[in-house]
Picture 1: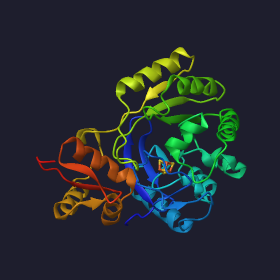
Picture 2: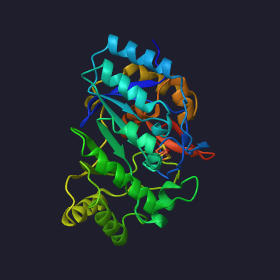
Picture 3: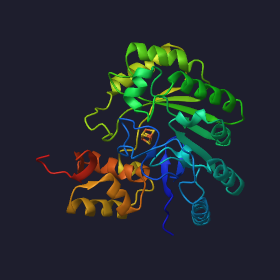
Picture 4: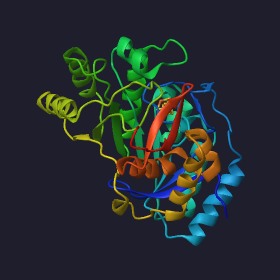
Length: 322
Ligand code: SF4
């Protein structure tokens, strides 16, 4: 069976084996983060609806679980903001009722936590990973480019309210992710704001992330590892526990489920011409998260490079003159 809404499973250092669900069409989100590896948001919205047919998703899940070893986690993520998917809570219930060994994770940009109904659905997840890229409105607007003016104080309050209730439940994990952009959210002022704010939010881990591939803002450079270590140290000295720097898989031998035929399809596409990320997703019937690991490996091995062509992230074969 060819899966349309599932991807992976992907081995993860912290989640074990994780099967992805992508319940949102490319690229639907209330934000347009400058670091987004999917490319620019084309459908700005905060509307929750059934973006994909839920019955089809459940059929795919049933098929996968009957024919494969149960993953440790099923993770909602993918080509947009997964909490926009209206049946999120119902599908979490379905997974918990039918696949007893598997936990559920939801990766979110936090902005939808203003919706109290959604918060109650997220309470059902075993792990929620909300991002909070800035505490000051100025930095938030520069990094996350929200679809409309947002009240960052309210947004942070919503995250805090959610976290307080969620972390009182048994066996829940809340990982707050901060994407570091040098010169915007890594100043001493911003670091101190983070420290004071995060002290008031119950969490399991704070994860510092940085650019790994070309983002929506093409010239954006990744924050240096030195800067991330500095921020980690500041956070720890400021009294925050469990602050870690996220690493990604880079070598093919580190990826247990590496599928050579998918790599071959990618290379065949790129031999013909430069290909946009969106076209690669269509041609390989993959999702951003799934194909990302292959692009990471091929990039690390200097087989392909990223280019910005007419404002779109594209990939091409690497030649020495590049
Ligand atoms: S990184 Fe996530 S929140 Fe930001 S634009 Fe991309 S999909 Fe939306």
